[in-house]
Length: 151
Image (cartoon, rainbow, N blue to C red; front, side):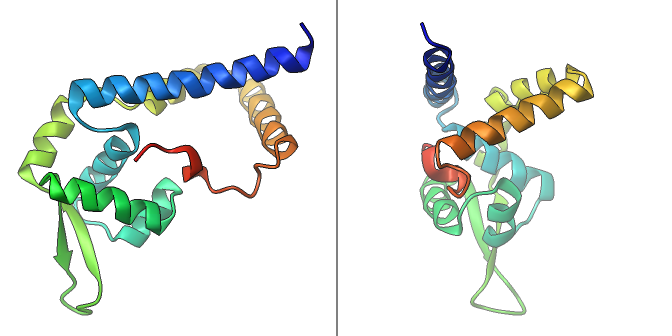
């Protein structure tokens, strides 16, 4: 097998692992990976605007709005109108959202971050450079990260 084939197989395994974890998360906790990340971020800040949430999670506001709409329909989050500008609103968790978050398993990214942080600094830098290069080789450097996020 050529080296590029091995690399493509590894990329497919990463994508598949993410999909499987998100499906398992949906089955166990009733939320997808992106929804769990949003719940965690809202919980950390208590109240956050959709724009701040999008910037923090590196997602588009359209993606955030779509996910928040579904989460609001399920009574996991609530929109609170701004007192200073009625066109704006902030997000906060409902009691149901807090309960779900407490019982949900950690997002897959937590496992990755834990293992990544155990690497030596030079290994972290090498991985970062390699993945940035792969993204560039796949013409993906300009694609926003939410492109493959399940909603």
